[in-house]
Length: 450
Ligand SMILES: Cc1ncc(COP(=O)(O)O)c(C=O)c1O
Image 1 (cartoon, rainbow, N blue to C red):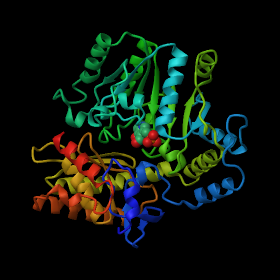
Image 2: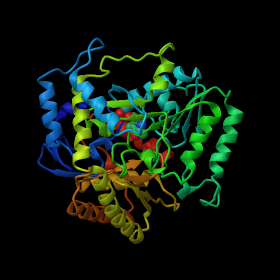
Image 3: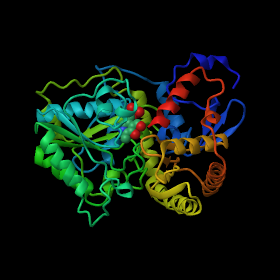
Image 4: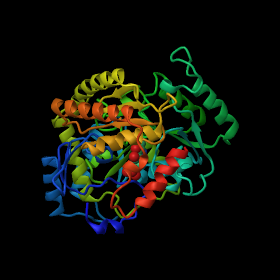
């Protein structure tokens, strides 16, 4: 990289040795001219592709009009955004708060649930990920992984992840009768005080390793919500807005949540998020102590982007595109898994795809998935991986072409063969010039220990 200014960056991740100058569609261009094919949509956000002309134009127009207003006035762009968002939500979901990130939106959803129910405890899914604030991290299994971030919040519980591909009970769906959920419910009954405000669920668990819940699981979670008088919060950061081939991930299981949280894709890379709920829930919050304010709630700039994203998703029929390209990619990943001993269990829901990366013990392995991700990066291909589960995560922009899929499959093939034929040392993946290389080393060590 040759640019010493990177020493000023305090990073906890092993960033790659490239500085990106610009991006278009699925392609990132580095300052040295090298190009990367982005199958991770940035951080799983850029579903319409980088620098989509309509989103660029909407941002430019709004930047010249008004960016930020604070909490005295709404902007016209804000009214347009909430109208567009509600137009694609399930009937009755017509109260919207706009904010910035997925973490902030989940915190907001939790505050709404607590205010509306007068209850306090929370339930997440093990292997779920809800953000990086103290409370949202507490709901996730990531907290054990990121030791040192503090203690878990109290009154927070987890149900077992519906991970049928790696069932910890050794059972098979549907014969299992969703035993994992029944066991989780029994534990919850023992552990909790019963004062549960909300259950949080991703319709497909993304960071936990592309875990697609079996039929009946999310309906079962919704039934538990009813039993406890709790609200169901669907965290649609990764699954929302056509990524899975439907408007919302929850559409696949026929469950309408009480609160729907959209982030990532809503800004196509710009941080804007939405918390969407019903009027009766809003009503219950009116006299409750609900802190609903941040400097950037309802900012017209993010709103203008969100409104244009939703319009573009509709006009370009991205749900159908996700289904079509997702099916094509899944077939190609299945072919790879059949050829390689390091790869197994290709699965997908629209353009949200996963592939187990198998380590020496024959099980998905975080270190091996990290090595494969790094080998792909070195060959100009960006994929995601799950440090929780040892899974490659592939969530490309929907504008990806068949030629780009073929190119990506070729790179994955070559990188996997390389790892199968060579006993690599992880030092191969150390950032060259990054000032935070020491932190990257400790990250890798922690991962190896795990
Ligand atoms: C399902 C889910 N929820 C919440 C978040 C947190 O969103 P953000 O990073 O925008 O705060 C993420 C981020 O990866 C996510 O995948």
